[in-house]
Image 1: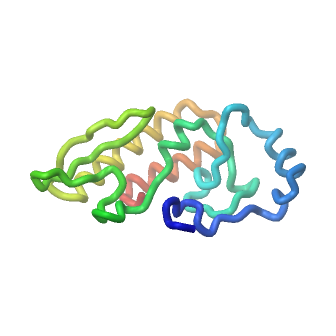
Image 2: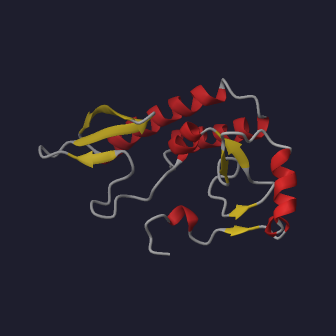
Length: 150
């Protein structure tokens, strides 16, 4: 892997799903039309595509939950950049738009603003979804954001 998408480094597929008919049988028992297959909403950091860890989700939600490592050029966390005046700018992308969250004195303050907004956006999904597995997974994502871990 070239490092451009580390989310997929060391990812594998369970033995069962290597037979397409078995994957299809599982898929047809899920709400899937127009949705994307996700491997790490239910289990954060999961690297195995399997019935226990996977679900189908809306593209907007899946995009919101995507995370990347620190910016390799600046070392800054996702959602944080440095302005020419030395302040740290927090911003979040969602629904195809970027929203500025403010300028902060420290990286930690900017990252906290980003994590808070991302948790709020995820919570908006929690209150409108019905699948308990996805809701539980989203709540784990919110908890990690609140603890500053994402």
